[in-house]
Length: 167
Image (tube, rainbow, N blue to C red):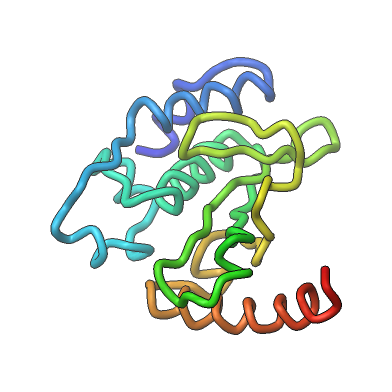
């Protein structure tokens, strides 16, 4: 299924990326669902694409990554945390976002599959990169509990490094 959809996405490498972003945004919908939390980081890219339902940016990223890899474009899962949350004292809600880096013409480009666009820079605005990997499992996050635990540890280290000296 993924290969079939990926083969329908055409163009030069950059156009493949742009058209893949468009396909992801136009074909996968975020809807409120009773089982949204149970599905969070639990499905494969094929399951996500088949259902046409995403729980958020993680699902959009996984679907887009699978389409790009099927077209032989290297793609990396990029987990970020909002600086505002890192600076706050609140544990929840946790604010972050998942991007995807794609490798074209000897350069990495940051894309935002949730919103169907390529970013202007390779550094997410107002966010800090937590980890990069093949997917969510590769960076050790398989559910909300994992995410919360790892983000809190990261925040403590980040705060010691960035806030203790006034900056």
